Length: 118
Image (cartoon, rainbow, N blue to C red; front, side, top):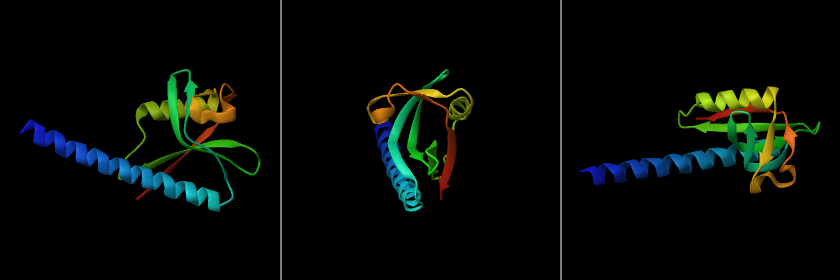
């Protein structure tokens, strides 16, 4: 019985991941078609409250960086994400990890735009 329940949960999680990945790709294409430059995917940045993974990092025509958090399937930002996003806007954070590319080690302030895909 427990194994069957675990298998069902695993299938649900896999479906949610696929839906989320598709939503991120849709949002990325839309921003690119609107003239924004994609800087990175799933980029990590460390705030005073810990690491925050950014779904997509873009640059606008004014050379300003901004984060895009994609939500799908009824998902909402966690309280922890909200706190870290506020800190990114007010205090900034340090880019870390392989997906940070040329930004690795730099400290930036950036706003987070939440895009919900239905």
